[in-house]
Length: 128
Image (cartoon, rainbow, N blue to C red; front, side):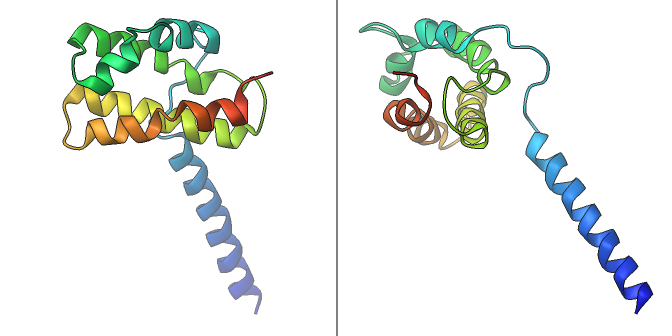
């Protein structure tokens, strides 16, 4: 019976470690280069912003690179309000979509449009 418990305990610890490792995979590390406000201003502010040009298919490679550089800071920032795990999930999804766009991966545009859901993020994380 003890050996079964030890084996079970080992798998529980190993699964927890694997889950934590997978959660961090692909996430940037360190301090954010830009604040959330900096990112929103650089990528989404104004009538002709980078986000809109990307969605229309008129963005340059420089636009995409600038967006990616800014999006890399989002997961490193604390959410202005709301749940940290939800923030992490949303920002990592957005970052992943930006990376896919930069690489020209099939389906990247659909991935970006789904991830760049301003209303969903603002309702959960934007302060009043």
